[in-house]
Amino acid sequence: MSDILESMRRIFVPIHKEGYPFILIALIATILLAMLWSPLGWIGTILTVWVCYFFRDPPRVTPIREGLVVSPADGRVSLITTAVPPAELDLPQEPMTRISVFMNVFDCHVNRSPVAGRILQILYTPGLFLNAELDKASEDNERNALVIETAGTRIGVVQIAGLVARRIVSFVKTGDTLSPGERFGLIRFGSRLDIYVPLTAQVLVGLGQTSVAGETLLADLSVNEPARQYRVG
Image 1 (cartoon, rainbow, N blue to C red):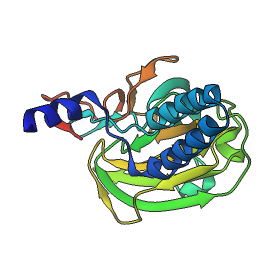
Image 2 (tube, one colour):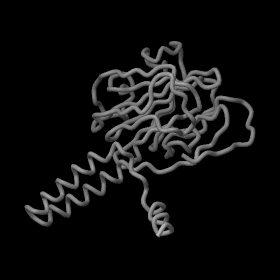
Image 3 (tube, rainbow, N blue to C red):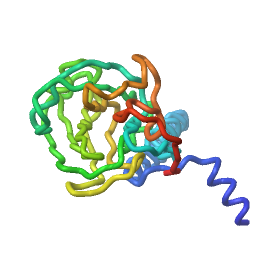
Image 4 (cartoon, helix red, strand yellow):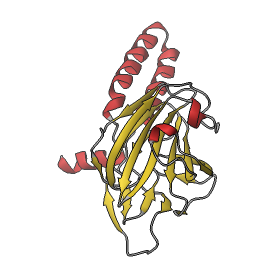
């Protein structure tokens, strides 16, 4: 029996607990629709499966080495540019490299820490719900920003709500210490993350590349390249 349960666990991707209420709502709606008209029940079933898929939380294998910056989100690298970080981050108001990862409604929306470090501050800013792919969404949209200090370097990570997203969920608080690839938040449904790193960092991704949270290397803050280790999370 234990072997069967382990096989099932490997087949089915874990679902984050934030999704449980939505899955329950979808199940109840499916039952009610099926009672009204069976074809509606099938539509509800498809929507329920999609909700489960949206809140999936698969394990990831994160490369570990001081200076590596991994993607905090699944999605497409939509922008690599030079920009002054938002004032609320309290970072020096000088240009930094900004890497934006856009998540559509089919991407996994659990966000992971890009580096190992301590959270210096977390700041929530209310705002609009523009298309998260627009450049001005970085300043106009509702967002939640983290400043993480890693090996003496401060980087910014900003969760940005989008057209459909109406809720940014944070799992951490100021002063917490994060491991690379550790879960720190979630956005519902479809959005973007901006990562601000120093101009001296070497960018390791290309525009349009698909990134995997906790696994894809976005940048390298260091110069040397010692052997890498990995952790599963």
